[in-house]
Figure (cartoon, rainbow, N blue to C red):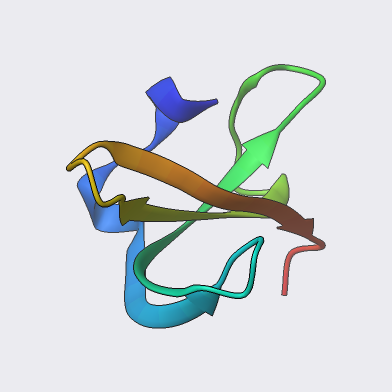
Length: 70
């Protein structure tokens, strides 16, 4: 799934509360994805992925969620 993500999928930046109650800056990406075919698809579910940089400087996947297309 991550291999299907494109720079144009960037949606916005926002603050996110993570496990333990910390609040971190995240970049939100949204892409249409068909899990059965394991590829991008205009008719697929909207998959939201939130990424953050942790205190050690590593890229961290904070959240993945799916929603029906609008």
